[in-house]
Length: 110
Length: 105
Image (tube, rainbow over all chains, first blue to last red; front, side, top):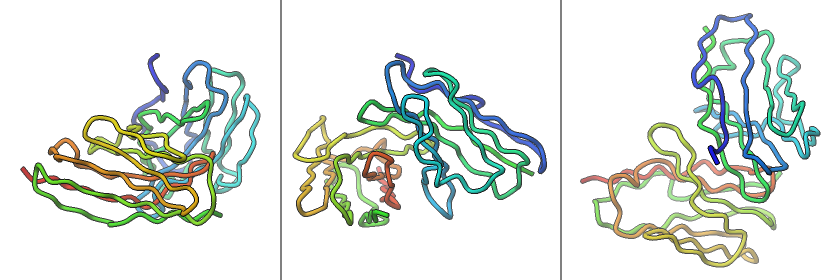
């Protein structure tokens, strides 16, 4: 298995632009998670899905953030409009029991 | 929510030394994982260990769920062991603040 796949690996954009991050989980895993890592706040959960259904989105910072999982093999995290404080590394993870992380997307909002 | 504390926050060791990293958590959990974040930022799974003891080469881990702590042991450290070690607990993985390990040649 190729593991959790994320794209793009790096994204540089200007404030106000829409950003879409993509994730392909490990085949057979029924849960998918989006995390954000910053120096100030460490690693924090944004949202997680179970069987493609959003279960807990309490970590989503505000309405500018949205996440979807249209099928078992694909999820997106969208930020619209983006702001400089959204700059961070965004990780996607999937699990059956043990979680496995993708390589992350480093987002820079200028 | 659950609190996760890791100690020490920083550790600098000579190559070949052994180390013990600790993770305390504030509530009972049915999931605990240890990760190594390498200098390139990748989160690498070390152990899935909600209870008991596991070993993998030079690394081993023990979780005492009833006393709400877990330990990660690294023996005969190598420079490639450098990075940040995270403990994370719960299904939604609440992360500790990590232990930054630096191995000096």
